[in-house]
Length: 265
Image 1 (cartoon, helix red, strand yellow):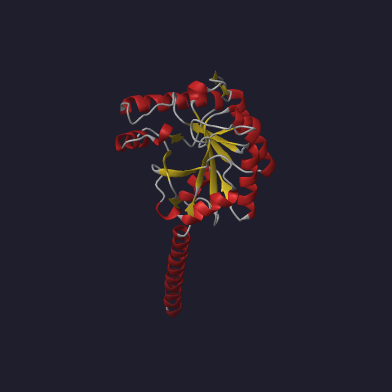
Image 2: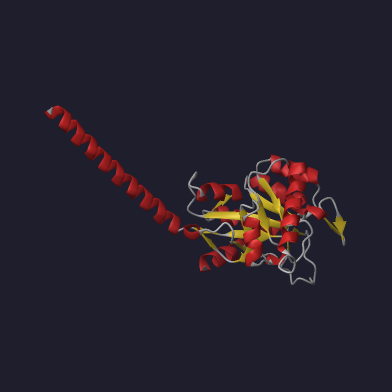
């Protein structure tokens, strides 16, 4: 009888100890989560030679050489470049987030992303997300060439590139009905999945960052996992998948300048 009581007491003590350890681990993880910034960088088109003038004030073009310098600088300064999928897994507690994560994204789906940037991603084995305007895929407009579905598939199959939606037709969706937004985003993902297969993670980057509270609620209720539409910094402690921010990288911004901007938040 005494032996049985002793075993019960020992078991209770072990349960209490295990419970205490679990609490400490949880607190440590939460503390670590609280400390982590998640910078998401935004690039657009790439050119070999920077023109003398630019109607968009050099905010949406860059050079491959500058991009490679950025990547080398990030890696040399201890950043780990992760995918949006890895961010989702970390947010769900399925994997640990590195101490200095960084996400690379591109908007619009320019051919230059494949021609100039994809080789750099392969060389350094870093991941990125490209948000495409599906009506522009395979097109050339105003002298600007866009990706083909074959190029998108090749990059996706490499395991380095995620393809997401930047809408069907690239308009100001804060000026359109939420029904039109919903239908356009659905149509864009239908087209993506037709050519690239089922997408487990669905991300929508708003054209021009133009959104309303109603558009956010609509997409959240219609299967979009991440919504991207603002400029700024994300913090892991209060990460909101429906309110993801990015830092726009203007022409020939150096890696050091980008890191200084990250650290300023």
